[in-house]
Length: 125
Image 1: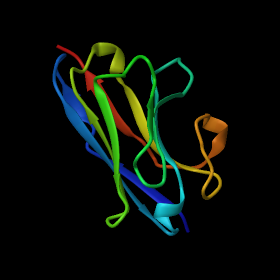
Image 2: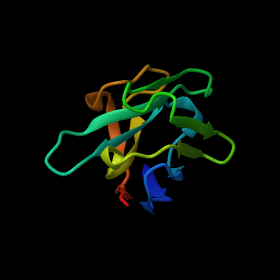
Image 3: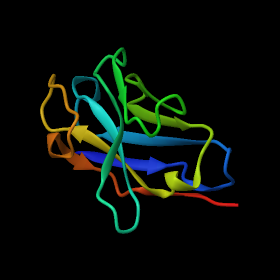
Image 4: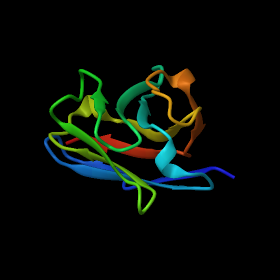
């Protein structure tokens, strides 16, 4: 079955960096767009970054553009989110997710069918 397992979260001071990882298994990883989402307490889940099957096309939310970088390693079946210049408003649980359909472009939460358990990121001084 499809499994997505995030790691790399933690606590960091404003201006710091973290790299999140997501290990995928149970399906043909290279056939699916992937995404990172986050959810802060009392807020709706929002998309942070998305990447196509080959890793050539990426999309970012305006709030993280220029600070976050999404990437993937299809050989290792891994998804990454490099987060730099972190701000307190980046504090949230971060989830990786797999697109519902193979070879489809996915950008909305409803486009994604499988989710990891999440990893907490806390940015505070």
